[in-house]
Length: 512
Image 1: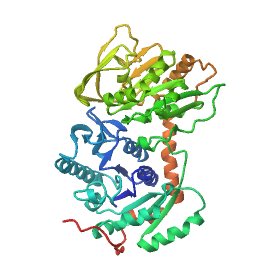
Image 2 (image 1 turned 30 degrees about the vertical axis):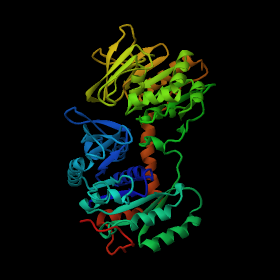
Image 3 (image 1 turned 90 degrees about the vertical axis):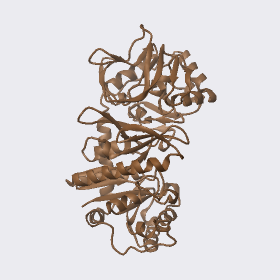
Image 4 (image 1 turned 180 degrees about the vertical axis):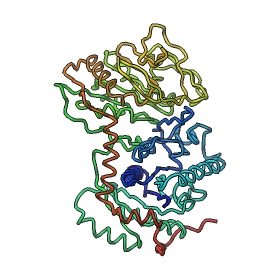
């Protein structure tokens, strides 16, 4: 056995969830399986800690896939993470550590370093595990990027592994996208593409079947199955663009009132998954928005994390959302800032690292000042907040350089150090993931409801975020077992791509 590549016709076609589902299916069979994504581009990252206590970053999708494999996440599962800070540059996180920034000028130079690290990490995992389930990036048919590719077919060739292409039928044009994906690859790449999976199908399989038969006949490749559209698969969405305006599917309110939460959808939003734990709660309606009017109607406004704090703060002011945030706070309604959002609430930000704009004024809602450091804080701390245990993770360059001596902290650490800030109805913290701590989340929501005048709101006593996450990966495994030809998948894992797969013209020119 070796590896298998889950590629896609597009970004957000379903590669991440199918990879997690295949991982859980194999894990259930007793296979020693590990996830792998050579390069991810996302601002939604997770912090992992190695045996020496050193923190590192990987994509959130790979952290969830590790859960599906029954493993603790590690940096080798996602050796290259690109975190966009603008339309033209991204921070390069190599084996968990921020090492550089990439743009068009240094792309080729850095690509050699990144591909070397990725191939080495894959080779190590392939020796240690029975199967490595690899997730591609974007589409393998991005022919402008095929030269020196190490994420899609370049990785498949390196590992001599078969590839499956997943397409999102909900977008339309799935058969053209599948055919075109194969037909734009050169002959050697095409020989590794074994077949397809249709994702997000709604309706009667009987109506779809003629199309499945035709794509098999046209390509000489197998359709391994059709995954249904499942509205419950929304936890740990890696790409913020995958979110709709309404987050989650909360159950009915336990008390007499709902709590309405508005999360500002910043242009460079990062770790938007922080709001998912709130959206898991019965009676809590969470909406991502860029509309000032929706902030006015909210009980709680959240400024989430961002990869570009100063630039997104400027955007907040350009759109008038800053005035909506200030009006919300001025009315005595609760306001929460997380990481970059916390930094925005400060009196002043000194940033010579990310934006390099120097000192800029914050929103002035918390008496703290922020200074950006070259080194990134990466940690998975624990403490006490609102009388409950809380755990989280930190990913930030910003440091609190000044805080008013009378300002109450949000979190107290075991050694007596403090983190975050509370000023009446305004809360701030650098910790991501804190609301995954169930009792802390309940107490925070109860405090927020009281401040917002929602005295009929009752926090559910039995919501377990960890159980919901485990149920998500179990559901993904169920979907694979119920809707894919797992016997054929197993043969693919054991034996590789079938020999003699036909070449589809025109193909791309063979690589030198």
